[in-house]
Image (cartoon, rainbow, N blue to C red; front, side, top):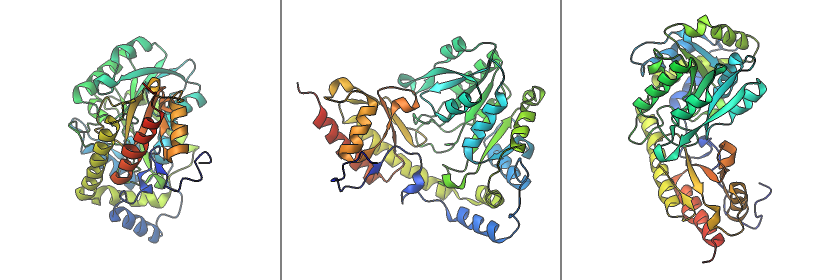
Length: 389
């Protein structure tokens, strides 16, 4: 924030972070708050939990996720509780680490995967998401990138940072490619059910009979509580492939030497998952739908910005920046730096998620502030910096 114009008294508009809890319109349900209070005051959850998580919490997650699965049901033994989805990512990347291994990651994507792959000495190979095709995966590229040392492919659905939602047939093709290549699928579904377009959320676990699926998820986004740090890693593996190849043992071994999620939050989880009403979820998705519309409509009106798709899920949109139309703006990093300084609007340069001269914008904010940030301030910024004809 040190680069902001100190004479600008307008409030800073944060469009770069994925933490909606900072804004008044995004507040968690009282069901979750009450469940945590009851668990804390019960004095039943003041000690250490098992390293894989409390049985009651794991059972609740299994039942919660099984509602969306058609061909199989999860058991508590398929669920491993983690300190948010970040630890779940660290866990599975570490469990897959072996000499000469590589992993297939989406571009654009979530940088946490690259970071943990680097720590675990796993080579990263990027496949592209195609903006002209609703950010679908370039499956031909996936086949070309994979070899005998490829251990997994990561998909993020609903999409961070693209705001897309994969269709059933595309998910099935991903599973078939994974089976052909002999690799597992890591399905990052942190934004599950935060959808508001034509495509419903479909868990990748529905295709686990084709290829084994590791699901990464948490309560952070759907319940608007990222600071509670409770997530899970789930094995969808009806054929027992993961156990046969030692992946389950590696997961348990990692958890045995790592920190655990807060016990009383685990204790509250069954009530949170079972008692939260559809009214709360509908309220959140309706706000996101309205904000997505405001975001898309505002950006469509700016000549140097190209929006390929209106967001249908998650809390983000990726848009292309044409710096050739701007004066004294050299790339996406320069654009974001000057936007912050001149307009007190903070957004993320696309290079941070893998695409140079793109922008990742979060619309998990009050629609009024979003309209001010994009429809007024960004539009004025781009007009002011536009090249003279």
